[in-house]
Length: 312
Image (cartoon, rainbow, N blue to C red; front, side, top):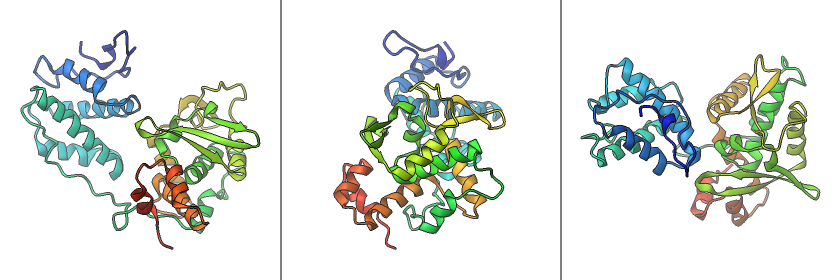
């Protein structure tokens, strides 16, 4: 067995579905079983696709550099992180994954060292003073306004506007919103709600305002009216972007969308988490209580509520 997609059992039904070649990464004959064990026991199911993508990229890099996990050193890991084609926050996540994965192999006796253990995290350049900033009302209006060179019924623009508006109002995390399906958006009487599966298996229900509901409908009317409830709420574009594929919009693509849309409006350095912080602070400035804010954030610790607050 030399591929992750070869691993499955009667209980998990293909825990690791992606195709990732692992043969040759280590000379230790126990490496493959240990790698499979790590993905099965140490990662939550929603985290596995991203981890598999990271392993695939890392494996290709090791092959190009003529390295194996057995010969890997801290300097090699640092070079890989520096060359990883993503922004700082994503590279921080990659480094954290490698620390955990290589550390697991070290504990199992597969490797004699965790080469990632001594590599320092990359500083996030989008944080000011150690915290994520909130956007101004003017910034939000520019983000949600249609550029002059975009048609009113442009499918990609309507999807991207709906994504940005939902991130701001729901305070949802980008991964949870990308995983949401049509069935998660529903009505109860005259009120509309969105059910989000957040991290650590938490499920948060977000109330949708009339304005946001209209923005979502403007986008959803362009998708297939016969879509099943199990189809994804935000889907990737197909072809030249006039129609949507069945595949979900991935978090990294959502990051790119927000970067592209903000830069087109003359805004630099806008990231999805800023929209979450912005929505929270708009709620607090409008008189919303910390207790309700804590509930809507899905935070178990009220200290995080204080951490999110930004003075005007």
